[in-house]
Structures are given as structure tokens and as C-alpha cells.
Image (cartoon, rainbow, N blue to C red; front, top):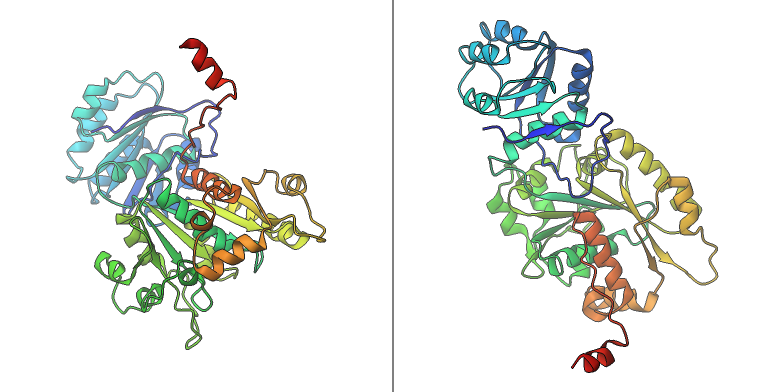
Length: 419
């Protein structure tokens, strides 16, 4: 079935809205047969997108005619992308392609606004998606990924990565409190993964002492499955679970770049929201965790070193994720007495975007929560910092916060007058 018939705008915006979630494609083969160099370039660029990292994509010229010639002698891939040529008979071409196409192959057609092929006829010939050109890379990514996410139970979870621009800025505290808000206030089943294997604090913050955690999954000789992950998770609330770090120095944690891929893929199958507490270090796996995440939050203190590091992270991530929305950042420990600070306007001018939140310096509040193994919302539910964490949770999950109507102080009097 055709999943959707979409129109590309003349100047499409590649910056993706927060709620326009595109789940990654599985390990599939994709072959595109383009009629124009512009479409070929867009498809080639789509192949570099993080959501198609597992897909093997090749681009050829010649349109549907070239596809028919190719598959007379070669097996068809999982997905075929076809660009129609001007004034061509697309229906006749699809009929001929069907004679050489393997069962189960999905077909995406990129057509022009003047195509006259009826929608019903395209469906009858097995076309899965029809996209009106000209297309950009994000159109191609969305089309390929939707073929699988719409029809199969794969990769439904959203990964949120939280990282500090500098060590000691409180990124872990922010990550844990935001995850708590996502689970409690937004009612999303969530998992926090503490990736700081040697010094992680998530188990302390949630007042848990699990004997197993993320390290058991990473060093497991077998590929981690859902049953294994479930056994390793500690339950924090009805909707929030924790994959804790061992926080021991009995071994060194020199991990490969893809060390956590299988764990993330397994969790995506069953958990709507996965929050990664990424330590402040620069390694292959840390970079991969950030680049492959759906949403990224950088936590920074208002000083020069944090400004420089946040700017560097923004530049790297925007270059590595050209079809995603830019990372977000928040300022933490704002207003520390006697400390010169760079204000939010200074950060916004350098990074070219405003922080999504500013968390005030409050050593008594945060110290009490840390020592008690509690979240800020547990000890001060009406505190403005609790509202700030909820605001961050709304932004990261793409859920718009419903604004409550302001109650006028004259409301009781007006009610009496109406009576």
C-alpha cells in the first residue's frame, strides 16, 4: 500500500521539527534509479543520514528503464526507489518491472506534479510510497524509514542523549531529573542508561543498589535481547527503569565504537523513551551515542570554557547530523555568588540559538536531593526548578505543554455577580 502522497515545497526546510520523529531503518538494501542529477544527489545525501546508517544504499541513473534492465539479471533489493521521467508511461514501466521484481520488495516512486497516473493504479501495482519532486535528503530518509516503521514493530523508542559541555556541570543531575519528569508527568515508559561506567551516579540519585546493570549487557558474550535487558534493569517507578553503571575501578572500560549499538536497538523495540547519561569524555562510542541519538541536550555552566566547548559540540553535531534539528542546550548553576558569569544572551550570540532553560544555583536544594537519593520533584514539587525540568522534558520529547489559563483575581467576584 502507498503509505502517503506528499508534496515537497519549492524550498524545503531540512530542519526537522521536534515532534517530526523518524524512526531509523533496519539493516536493508536500497537501490535508487534516478532520472536527474539533483535527485541522485539528494538520495546520495540521504545515505549519509544517521537513520539510514544500517541501510546499504546505492544510486544509479536511468530511471525505471535502467531498473528493468538491471533486475533481468540481478535479484531485487529490499527497497527500490524509482524516479519517473517527463512524459513517460509510469504504469507500463511498473507492469514490466513487476515481471522481474522479487516478492516482498518495496517500491518508492518519485514523480512530478504533472504525472497523471491515478493513485488507485499505483496501489494496484504495488507501489508503497509516492513522493512528488523535487526532493531533498530528508524526504528520502522519511520515505524509506516510514516503509518499515509504519508496518513493522521496529525501532519505536526515542533516544535522548544528555551530555555536559564540561566535567562537573551537573549534566547527570539534569538527565536524571528530566527522565523522572518524562516518566511521571508525561506518562512515558522510560529507561535511564548511565554510560559513565567507572564513576556513574544514577544509582545514587535514584537510591538504588542494583547488582547488575549496563556493564553486564556490554560485556555479555551473546547479543543482548529483550529478556536479558529486562533482567538487568532496576525499577525506579512504575514507568521509570535504570540500567546502572557499575561505578567500580576493577577493570578499564576501553570499549569499541559500536559497543552499545545492540543494547540501544533492543531497547528501542520496547521502550518509548531512552535517556542516555553520556559522560564528559571523547571516545568513538561517546561520539556515536551523541550522533545517533534522536535528540541531544548539552548542559553548560555560564563560563568561558563551557561556552567554547558547547560551541564546538554544536558545530560537530550539526555537521554530522545535517537532516536533524540542532542540539539543544541549557545553562545550569546560574547565579553562583561572587562568580563572574556569561549570561544567556552571550551564549545565544556565540552559539546562535537560545538556551531552552536556565537552572538557578541552589546548593541546598540539590545537595539535599543528592544526599537523600531523591529527585527535585520529590522534595520540592512546587519549586520553579521542578517546573524547569518538566519544561525541558516537553522540549526533548516534542510534546507541547498545554498552557493553563490564567485565573484572574476578579474571578470569584464575577462568579457571584453572574449568580
